[in-house]
Image (cartoon, rainbow, N blue to C red; front, side):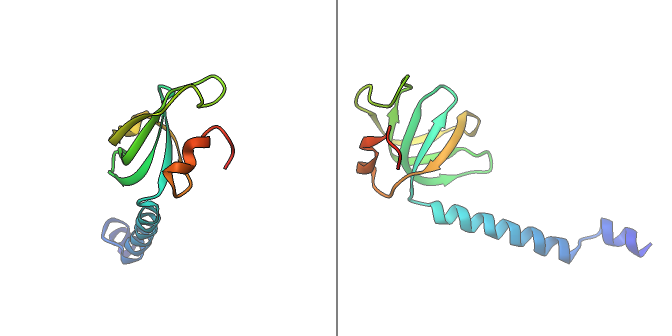
Length: 113
């Protein structure tokens, strides 16, 4: 009977593990704030901007965002489109990569960093 109460009742050990895991995830997200990120989307576009926030649905808000259109070889097809503040729905995110700290470094976007 004591085992059933332990499993069904609140467990302080389980809560501390969950709390610890949650705080590590929060710390990781906080360390990414204001970092330059490259987000590839399902339609082939890539957005580059400063990571400002996210929510539990994995929607992402980028500041000072630039949009790069899909290209067959590199992103040299033309000038990026300046978006400013952009919200990317979580279900459209294919990949997220932390870029260099400066937006000016994204000019050589096709090269390896």
